[in-house]
Length: 233
Figure 1 (cartoon, rainbow, N blue to C red):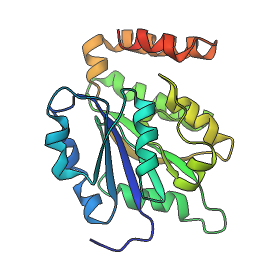
Figure 2 (tube, rainbow, N blue to C red):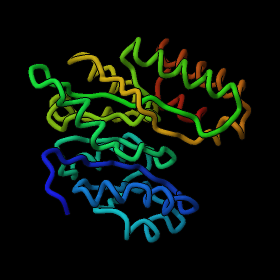
Figure 3 (spheres, rainbow, N blue to C red):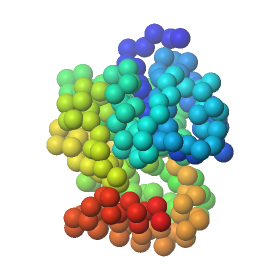
């Protein structure tokens, strides 16, 4: 294993991902070979997710179901000085570790503390190009990142703000708000590719309106425990 100056802990919440977990984790093995770690946090899978994943990870942790709870638990056991929160349907660029370290530490006089990638949806439908462009533009403008954009943060800052907000939904937005109070995110132009399966299954326009409606309700004070029931219905 190579000696590295900055170790990244890739924290991945999973639930019943046996169908694609090995393909996903195999893509991360070059990062492990360069000294970074993969922390898989399982929320009670009823399939073979954990068995299939075991050869490709450094730690596997059993957790209560819930993306925020899973990520928070993973961070408590991670050993890196940078945490990267990654969804199991999102693929990193090949040199993601170098990109992250450069984004955070290239300016020695003013090192950054957190950031996110631009996102690309996996489907080829032309409207996906519009959606992802708007997502990336809005994120840079507001300083709010979504989980699909692979948020990364120094462990020092993550712990200083009190860690992952333990809410049932919108934890990525709340985490971004807490981090934004410290400094703006580094908006990395390199892209992660996230699955468009939800959009394709439920209809592109229908999904757009659904997601915006959820965000609007959250903005006006609807509790995450109420929204999560609608989200997973």
